[in-house]
Each structure stands twice: as structure tokens, then as C-alpha cells.
Image (cartoon, rainbow over all chains, first blue to last red; front, side):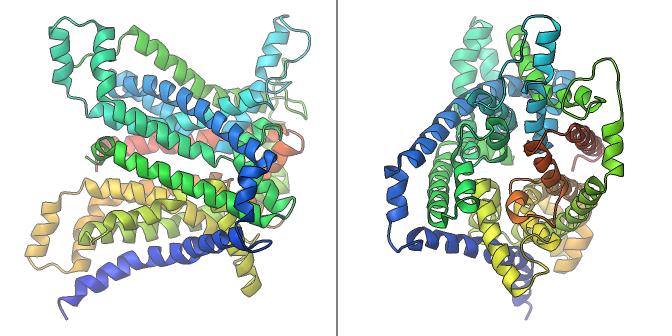
Length: 279
Length: 266
């Protein structure tokens, strides 16, 4: 009786959430995965369409291209602000922290709308340029691929900050002091010592950002204005505008597979950085 | 002696900080425009779009709905995550990493896939019971719990990681029961972490759009859903006004959290 009490307690504590997620999330996902090989006809036809259908293929290629650009820009930008957040003076750290966390907790919808307020035809930038007499008619700044990249980068910089911060916190200050003692310049210390020592954080941040970009829906839908459709929007359109559930399901399965592979890589490559965050 | 960031790093970081704040600041002037369409105010400022949020029954209804969904889903998600986190921390079960990984899935899986999964789950639930299915407030709450529970768990695990295990071990050695350990030792030590988790879970539900878009149509119009419709049809400056309100709420919540943390580091 006494021995079984902890087992019962652990079941009562762990059970509810696991049961809930299994019922509401895991089993329905398997159901959808099944559709990808049964709708409209049994077989792997939908997966062949992913590589054969030129429209679907072009959407995938555009998504990968945008994701790659967003990943590089986000990680580089995040590196700069994380550096100040981790190594700055007390005041610099507080300012950096607020600049990172406030956007992080504000909805992607509000942030996409903010970009629209800046970039749309009657938005701030066009209003300023016209007010200054630099242009006569508004520039088309939104509803294109560049604005999608801008908006997504804005969303993802904070996500890149966290793995970078734990990698930077793990750097031993004495190594940097030694480099300085040996006469290395600031730039040299950064380039040959600090950057290589935080490389695992850079890889981790890159993988996380790339994973998050893949399934992005709201930002591209608002800022792209239906012109540069990405994978997530393709799923939405195929599910709701033209009932093509088999393809939507197949795209979902492929997305989850890609994300799964990238996450496995992340755990393998960036283990030190992730372990650092647990401390 | 730590080497502080040099001028190059500070300039670059300042650029990034400005970039991060830019779109949040951009909505402020636009929210005060007297015009009925999205534009910069020219000379005259007006509060009509803020009044619109209170006077217009659609905005009011959607805010109350989001408030209700936010509170219920935050309480449910935090309770589930708290129990789960306690189970992991106290019993350190085999495959603990795997179990945590399962709970974190909705955070990692592309939102559009989660949205599809929840859409089909709720539509099939509708056929059994039309109270908790597609386009109902309980259905949206269910979907929100799935999406916010990983964030609640992460915050609770972080709080638990800061509890000194030796206190719990001592209590156990003195013969404390499991519930005595939970209520007498662990919970008092992590109460601010749990509060933070609940607050953040509320904010996430209150602003959730990616999944909400898929599981609602005409009845359960939450605040973000209402904003989404405004963005797509014609850009209504009321969205700028509500954005400013949301930004202010989030900033206050975060500042409150920072102050709490400063007082109670655990």
C-alpha cells in the first residue's frame, strides 16, 4: 500500500495532461496523417503531387527561400542585441530585455498590423516621404515578399535570442581576459574567441528560427496580401477554399517531418547550449 | 572584470532594438486619426476609434469573449501544466524528457498544422455535442489550452528548477506525505512562477489568432478574430486603437512580472 502511493500520485499528476493532449491533439493528428494516403483515393498520389505539381513545388521553394533569408537576418540581428543583453551594463541589460520581451509577448497579428501601419500606401513611411516632398505618389511598400520577410524577421528575432543568450552566458570570462592579456584587439577577441565559442548557440538559434518560419501563417497572409503564398497559406487555401483535404494533409505531414528532423538535429548539435539554459 | 560591449556592438544592438519597437510605435499616431480609414492624423487628433471599441457592440462582445476564453483556458492550462510539472519534478519518471517533449509539441509543430488538427477535432466533436465543438467558446477554449499549455509548462519547470531539492528531501525524510510536500514545501516556493505562468497563458490566449482563425466562423468571434476581419476587409483604424490597448496591457504585464521577479527571485 505504501509503496504504491507514489505511483498513484505520479499517475494522477502526469496523467491528466497527457490524456488530454493524446485525445485532443495526437490522435486527431494521426487521423489527418491517414487522410494524406487515403483521400481522395488510397495511395501516395498526394505526395507525388508535392514534387510533381509545379504550383505546389514553387510554393515550397518560395517558402524555403524566404525561410533561409529570414533565418540569417534574424540570427545576425539577434546576436547583436543578445550580446548587449548578456554582457551590457545594468541599464543596457534592462533596456535590451524590454526591447526583446515586449515584442515577444505581443501577438503576431498586432505586429503584422504595425508593419502595415508603417508600410501601407497611407502608412507612416509614405506619409513622411510625401510630406517631405521626396515622392509624389505612395510607394508600394507592403503586400510583397520584402514586407513578408521584414514582418517575419521581426517576429522571430526574440526566438533566436534565447538559445544565443544561453550560449553566451556559458562563455568563461577568463578565456576572454586571457586573449586580451595576450594582446588581441576587441575585434580579434570577438572573431577568433567569442564567436567560435558561441557557435552552438548560433546553430541552435538558426534551427529554431527556421522551424518557426516554416509554418507561419498570419504574417505572410497579411503582409504578403495573397501574392507571395507560403506553405502554411497553401494549406489554409486547400482546406477551406477548394476542399482538397488530401493535399492539405500531405503538406502537413511533410511539414511535421521536416520540423522533426530539424529538431533532432538541434538536440544533437546544440546540446551544450540547451543544457546551459537549464542551469 | 567583464569586458562590456564596445561601440560597434552597441550601435548594432540599438538598430535592432529600434527595429523591434518600430511597428509597435507606428500604430500609436494612427490610432488617433479622426479619419474613418487608416491614415496619419493631419493636425487634428481624435479619440473616436477608442470610443468605438467601447460603443460598438461587436468590439465589446469580442473583448468579453476573449476575456472569458482567456481566463478559463489560462486556469485550465496552468493547472494541467502545474500538476504535470510537479509529477516530473517529484518523481523524475523514466522517459521524463520524452514526456515533456510530447507536451511541448504544440509549440514546435507548425501552427498551421496544429490549427488543422484542432479544426478537424472540433468539427467531429460538433457532431457529438454542439456545445464544445467548432465555432463555440468552449471549443476555442479547448484549442487554446492545447496551444498555451507548453508555455505554461516551460515557465513552471523553470520555477521548479530553482527550488532547492534538499528542502523537499528533508521533509520527505521527516515523513511528510506527498500532499504535505506539495502544499507545504513546493507550491509556496514556486507560487510566483505559477502566477507568471497563468498571466502569460492568459496573454497568449487573449492574443491567439493562428488557430482561432481555423476553429471559428461566425459565432465565436474573439478579439484577434475581429481584428483579422478588419485587416482583411478594409483597414479600420479601430484596429490601431485596439493594438495600442493590447501593447499597453502586455507592457504592463511584463513590467509587473519583472518587478515581481526582482522582489522574489524564485
